[in-house]
Image (cartoon, rainbow, N blue to C red; front, side):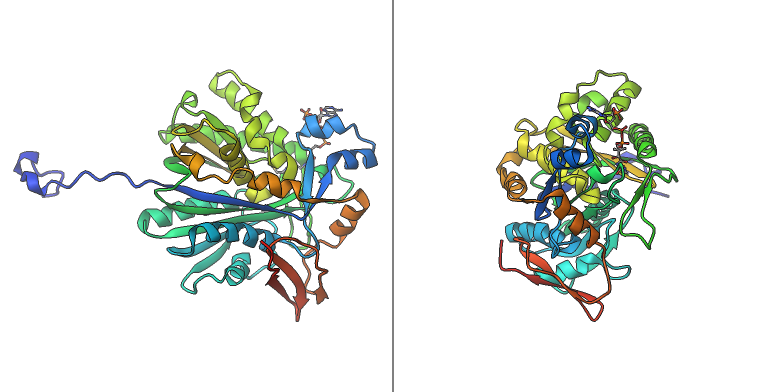
Length: 407
Ligand code: COA
């Protein structure tokens, strides 16, 4: 006889299984890093003879970060991860997941370099994940699963990218660079992620990067419609999985290849659901991405960092996070912001990082762009970055990194 067939009254009271509280898992901390330089889109507009309003209003971007010659996804990812480790230590970290679209090696995971630079314990698994800009969210989902099975562990997720398109293309103003390090744990300080998720996959050629290219190819118009389809499709799937009503979500944060993309998609969702759309509700989550430009896998998480840093009224409220990776995969998750999240955020930190970037002229940016491709040819990189780690160069075909001694 199975347990289900057993009449309830035959079970002695003392043998009834204790009511278990569902495990709370989610985002314990987030740290952000970005490139050493910045290109103001006003300067690019002047060079290209474009009305600057096309960038500020039409695509919703103000500037983009440009890595120094001795920076890449590893140095930015390590800088963000260092902040997290400095705050929380390494105890319980047995998994490092590195998500990127702009990997520096076809075999070795970028996270292994970070593991070495940060001096993480040897009993750690490290792996790299890829699906365009979606990889960071896939990594967080995997991390949540690991924690659900081993609540005493913590998972370090790193999402880092350099968004590179060819110069003199429509996509040039939507480049960028940045990283997010996310510590996933039980009983998190910032956001508890709810179990239901809406997912959506469709085979679309809207953005891709063949193995022989260091710049992405993109069909911008198609990427808008593919993103909208994935957002609405993920919403419908979330509803089918028992997700919350639209009215029960106070804020949405989206993947932001350019912030206007998120606005367009959100307008479509509100039409689909049949609710009014107030553009201003998305503005806070755009604050940092308008400055960094597209950061691919890190973009959604930089948006979340902005929301948590700059909105004071989220305690106990439900937020939604939409991730999109061209090609294409979308995922929509929801989370409850912890009542005391304001005690754990590091307000001002990202603003200071963005303000400290060194401006580039258009000529200087284009020179750096031309030398930005990953290479196996031996080269020494000049010392430029003010970040904690730098890319020394390529020796014997292998990439080398070092600590700079700066915080
Ligand atoms: N003032 C205000 N808005 C202006 C303007 C001006 N002077 N001039 C143009 N605009 C608006 C246009 O009306 C348009 O808005 P709309 O889309 O709401 O109609 C917007 O600016 C863009 O102009 P448009 O000429 O249509 O686009 P573009 O050919 O310059 O390309 C992108 C813009 C975003 C499509 C292009 O930069 C791109 O492909 N970027 C990459 C996108 C990407 O990464 N996708 C993959 C990840 S999802």
